[in-house]
Every structure is written in structure tokens, then in C-alpha cells.
Image (tube, rainbow, N blue to C red):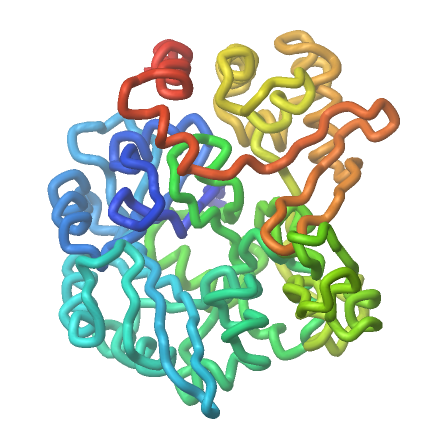
Length: 449
């Protein structure tokens, strides 16, 4: 019997041609940090952007004819690329404006070029790596599938309040309403940072869809790329094998999704940031979703949105569903335990690099490393923190209305509070002059590359 290989895949990221994205999101940096993270397969993102597609053609090659690409001139690279992109469709349904983001997977650059020829009629592909298209979701799927039946489309970050299929502001109550007669070609949905499998399992209408999780990363830093991902076990690593397992919802191949706790996200509970009001679904609904302080409407949280559409109690799990695990980026865990100002500090990098050197990559630390071995390399408190995160033994204060949640690793000690940093924009301010974050990275990763 052929031995299966473990493939950790992050199929939804962005290039530097997307808005508010790090200028370092190029192929070499993506390869570099994907290997540190432990990713086997990563999406290219943004294939619809002409300049990025040109770079993909120059820097990637499908040397083995398997629909996946390797970086040119780096035969030792352990990372494969799948040609992927995200697009935004804006259209009207039942008299209401709808704005929904979608992920597209395609097996070749040639197929991507054909998709671009069609989509360019509906929007300016050069304006953004994630272009806005004046077409319905159904029209998008029809155009993509007509290019090739090997292509696949699925809704991105399905539950975020804005720009998602179930979004509270411009989404739908049913997948069928969004994709119309093309829903027969939709095989998956992306849980995103705002939801996890148990939340989606509460809707019986979603049982037929495979749940995927990806980072939607705008930065190559290892606390961004791969923070959510999918774990496959395959006999052969090809585009067809990965996509077919998604189409079949094959739990023998797609073993689990790697998720951040959805309460960590900034729209989990309903609330009003200006007034500091944060409420679970039952309390928000009890007061009619009106802020008790200023009487303005609350921003509806994802948990409440799920509650509105669910027809099952929390805890139900459909048979033969892939599993999931909640993890946190290792840099953030270390930062929380040692009280560093950010996951990019030199103190964090020093401990991080020691663990990566010992265990090979970040996922090996987060998912596989034993307490005793980690304690020898770092210290027992960090080792205990990793184990607690892995086993879900942490306290989470939910995020709301744009305020990130907070994870407290050692609530009994009041220690180890993890709060999401404000993403790539802050990082990018330091990058051009090789100061601060960038300087720390250059110094601390030289032993790997």
C-alpha cells in the first residue's frame, strides 16, 4: 500500500498587488516563510492581476505536469504552488446590493489567462489583486467553469459581516440564493477567521459542502501565512488529487482544518466598539440589536448570524466530516508568555528559531512536539503554553465590532494574553529601511537560508 504524505495547504493568500498588502509578498518571500511555517502547498493568490501573473510565469514552473508549480531555480524548495485568486462580485438580488468574495482554483497559468480574458469584461483587473467585478456570483461560476471543468470556485470567508456569502450586511441566507443554478458547481466554502466547523455544522444545508480554512494572508510573516490551513493525506500530490478530495468531501484525504478560535476574530460577538458594548447572541437579540448606551444599531456578530440561520444545536457533527484543530501562531504564543511587545521582537525570534531548528517547522512544534522536548529548547512555560493551545485549554474573550478577541493562556496566573496585532500595515511601515521587524528577521533567519 502506498505511503500517504501529509500536506498542509494554505490555498488563499494575496500578492503585493492587493490593497493593504506587504510589499514583501513575492514568490521568494512566500517560499521562505512557507517552509518555516511547514506549509507544503500554498496558493499563489491574485492570478487575475496582470503584473502578478507575469511574475508567476517568470518564477514558477509546472515541471512535473501535475497542475502544481515549483519555484524556478530552487530545486530544494519543499513548497508547491497552486494557481489561485480571489475576486469580489457586486450585484443586485431581490432589490438589495450584494457583495461577495470568492476563491478560484485553477490547474494552470494557461487556464488562468483564459479566465482573465473573460473576467476583464466585467471589471478592471489591474486595479487590485482582488478585483471588483460587476457580475453575479452565478455568472462568475459559469464563466470560470466554461473555461475548464477542472476549475473550482467557493465562497471566501463565508461568515464575515462584509463581503461574504452569509454576511450580515450584504450576504444571503442560503447558498442557493447566492449562486442560483450554478450552486451545483460549488463544492466547498471557506470558514475564514470568523467561523469554525462546529459553527457551520449547525446548518444542515451546508452538509454537502466541504469546509476549507485558509489564511487570506496579506503578509508572509509566519504569524500570518498559514495561520489557518488544511491538512491532507495523499498518495500523490497533484492538483487533481487535492481538488477531487474537496469535491468528494473525502475525510480520508482531507483530514482536518487548522483554525484559529473564531472568538479570537474581531466580529465574533455583536457589539458597538465606540461604547465598549459586547454581547453574546441571546443578549443582543433580547435588546433588539440596539446599543443600550447610544441607541444605535449594533454590529451583528458572526455567532449571532449563525444562530439566526442554524437548524441544529451546537455540538452536532455530521457523519464523515473532516476534523479540525484550534491553533495559534507560535510567535504569538511566545510573545504572550514572555510579555514581548509584538511577535516580531528579537526576543521572540530567538526562541522561535531555537524551536524551529529543533523540530523542523512551526507546525511540527504546534501539532507534534512533546512537552519535555520543547521545555529543553525553550522553557517549561512556553512548552506548557503550546500544549494548552493545542488541547484547547485556554480562555477566550470574544472580539466584537472590529475589536480583536483576546486569548488568555494561563488564566489562573493572569499570564499569556494573546491579542491579534493590527496586521500587515504596521509591519510594512518598518520594512523599507530594514529596521525593526525587518532587521530582526534578516538577522534571525540567516541560519535557515
